[in-house]
Length: 271
Ligand SMILES: NC(=O)c1ccc[n+]([C@@H]2O[C@H](COP(=O)([O-])OP(=O)(O)OC[C@H]3O[C@@H](n4cnc5c(N)ncnc54)[C@H](OP(=O)(O)O)[C@@H]3O)[C@@H](O)[C@H]2O)c1
Image (cartoon, rainbow, N blue to C red):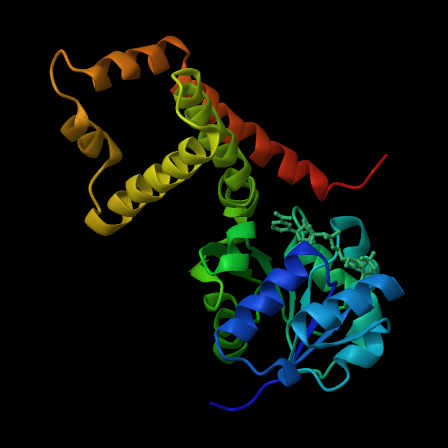
């Protein structure tokens, strides 16, 4: 495959997750260049990842075939406008910032580049992530392919219409935090019954992993898999009724709904 040069703008949590996933999947560290704002982050990212990390965005993108923007939403427009001129004309700009639309990205680069809005999640750091890509009009198949090559290193990828991006943010990007709370709560229940904390956490996490893997591996509806575990007059139905008493379904569904709503607000101009 043709060697490519990738510029990752922003060497924070997500920028590093993207870089690490790519390196672990066989991209040479020398094919990456990253940037950060402070000297400290440049030094630590460079030593952790073995990648060149600069403070100058225009310099970093000069020879890049693609720029992946991993800064906070408030910094995206400025960064994109900075890299637009030095970046090769045919190189797309991918932004992972929550709430920042393709039209904001297009405006920030003065329509000089194809832009792709992407939404990864933190499990990308261990190759178990989800990234949804939403290309703007005019993105070529080779530009999308190159973007998918990067994010395929980090887990599953999906290409969806931009109208779904805020919902995807609420579900797959915020979702890991919701599952962490659930794992903690599951473990707490077992600790209350005397199981040592460390074993309880590990078992809860492995159980969530196993249940999720069954949904993906079998393709069966979660309700059917739940019914398989639920013996009449058994312990599982007793636990399930306790969950229903606590309105577990609407609580979790509303969390996704409200996180998605908040994601849509992040891209709105501040008054
Ligand atoms: N965290 C998540 O779960 C998650 C999931 C999906 C998407 N996202 C999106 O990912 C983006 C980054 O989030 P994060 O959690 O990785 O943030 P973060 O850890 O704060 O990282 C942001 C990085 O951007 C750098 N930076 C700031 N201004 C810059 C500039 N002008 N030029 C170059 N680099 C600059 C910062 O450098 P310094 O360290 O030197 O200040 C820092 O390394 C956000 O837009 C967020 O919406 C996050």
